Image (cartoon, rainbow, N blue to C red; front, side, top):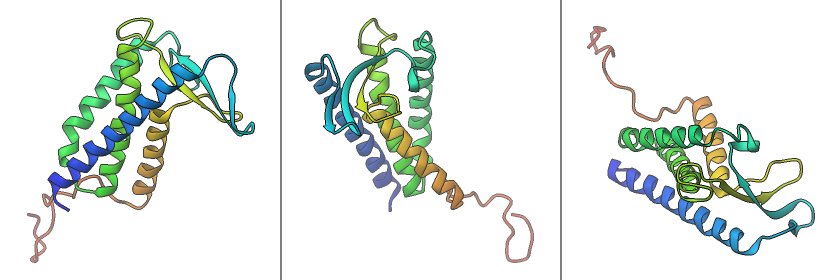
Length: 171
């Protein structure tokens, strides 16, 4: 697959994730007030939760730190993604980019203030913190990245520097 096609798919996947996350968070804000609503008994419920921290509501007083980290991850992916030659790693980057954009949008534009916004979480499973589509996307990307790493699949093709030529000399 051509590099430009991989990049287009990476950015398209990120845009789809970001859009679904945005739409579902707005749905949650408009429709979820009060108690949790059961979708599949107590296994899957929907509930509105405004999270000022990270996963598991960790470090709630450090919203600006998480905003800064998200911006750093965003810039890293945008700079590094043109070098990705593996389709699997392009999927990982697209999932992470979409997830980061989803949660970063909340931190930048939602209440209580610019750069200090709370992330909208709304999916509830038993014995698990409330989460959203962006969080799910990042977790799925982490699982795929782990599998690719175990399979020794690299994000980019190894360079030929230091490779031995047919005479055994290092080129």
